[in-house]
Amino acid sequence: MSDIESLLEKLSNAHGISGREESIQQIIKEEIASYVDEIKEDAMGNLIAIRKGAAPSIMIEAHADEIGLMVKFVDEKGFIRFIRIGGWFDQTLLNQRVVVHTKSGPIYGVIGSRPPHVMKEEDKKKVVESKEMFIDIGCSSQKEVEDLGIVPGTPISMDRGFVHLQGDRVTGKAFDNRAGVVVIIEALKRTKSKSTIYVVAATQEEVGLKGAKVSAFGIDPDLALTADVTVPGDHPGIEKKDASVEIGKGPVVPIADGSGRGLIVSLKVVEWLLETAKQNDIHIQLEAAEGGTTDATAIHLTKAGIPTGVISVPTRYIHSPVEVLSINDIDKAADLMARALETAPKFFR
Image (cartoon, rainbow, N blue to C red; front, top):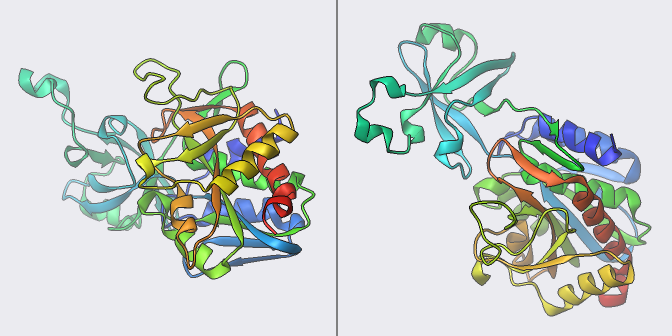
């Protein structure tokens, strides 16, 4: 198993929903400690590591959080109702196994709903909504659940393990955005850049790009690069006209996302990334996306504006517990970021 695959497995199998990223941040801290001069945490829980150097100062960022659930209330029979934290498609939640994270340790449960055997025929044709679901941890009363330390606000994540598929393809939960975290860690380890580098593992991206906004304001770098995942159009149910990139074809350099309501990358940043890829023989894919955005949107609008680019890893089935990507795409994305850190002074003086 490669170093990249091993690190992705460690990060994917760990748990850290939006606003509760502490365990992920600890893994990242341990991975990068020997490559930086200083590590700190800001008021939003963002992990910020600094490698001191010359101008320009460059922020490389990936969000550490994953989408998850949170306890809403426990009924008299011990079944847990929940709210969604982040952008879930309800169909992917039904019948999943989950981990309820209490102060005394993990409690396992399953997401259930009314079985089809007792549904009317018209109800069987409808999507089961999350508000109709509940979590069963095996208790029979509200008191039993509360005695375990499960109260409103307790975080919940999916219980899914990292698995190797065929070739260099792997599957697991939270590749959005543990894949991006791997990219910034590997880029830091590989680069010979002389610039000041700020490495940021941001919090709460999935609920509003919150951590990136705060960290960028506090750092105020000259430039920024965000690493995230993006939707490929290479499997049944989606067409190339809707998403033109593919997994296994290299990292993606977005030019715009959210139909321009998110980020429109400046021509100078585009030139920087394209020229760097060309000089280092790194095959990239360009993307102009209609939906979705990344932390780069929040970063580039901070203070007087920060030139910001994105390097993405094509990932199938995003926002599900069975995301799929290519390890080679992560490897090349990390190379592109590492080399871009080195070429930045040529483009931004």
